[in-house]
Length: 366
Image (cartoon, rainbow, N blue to C red; front, side):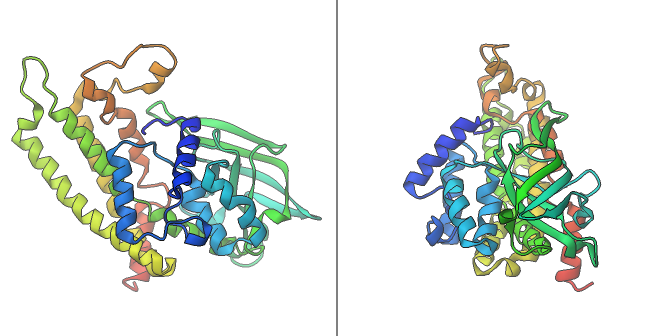
């Protein structure tokens, strides 16, 4: 599931939905499973163990819970079933060139014009916008008072006139991010989620859920791939797994991963009581989870050496090579591209420094 084309992701979502499993953490009345925290953790782990397609649909993870909490009945009926079935794929329009960690300084503006808003501005680091058909977006609707008080939350189509999507290629050669430009884009006011100028409350609710994202699942998957590589018998050489120093490094990470598992399970349990109860703990989980994921990919590149280079699925997809180069397990191991990609996870969704400030103020009272 590392490089899952959108058609495959849509089909897999429909297969899960037919079983009632596409949105397991949602409330039962909106298609959720009603599973316990332990069942949700087991489900995630089982999907990882069989290398099922990874569904990074931000509609499921981020927007769905927002609509359930703040959306009108019309919005819920219009969007939630299509998210659940994979009919709509959503991008997140939060960060701007001069508004990242200081998100409240965003400049993208929505001006009232009768029954519509006219939007001008730009969003950056917009994950998979080139694959999505819709976007949820923070816009400025008022300049008076505190900056947070003039922000609204809109949901709308990405094929509206005046929208341009430009790719941003990562250092690892991947096209995941984009910059989205809005030029006199007309959006109906029915796209407003929550009240006008109340988008900051919606945004904070969403970010708590984003930070509760499971990093342990990815770390387990990466470790399994590393073990497979280390156990590979290269002609004339012993398996690298016999190296005691490498085994010690694996053991250290496995201990940290066990603590992350417990922390994420506790976070999920608190989320069921309400996102306010879990707010600070999600910051702790994000700090721990993102740092550990980086350690795992660092170890992968260290032990794989040149075999971390060949995993470029797009070369195969485009016909440049008939098969990937290297030992067989390199095809399913962790690549340099993933190593580079994970350098930014301590920034995305709120930097580690921001998370520490949240813990300092909300938990320690500093």
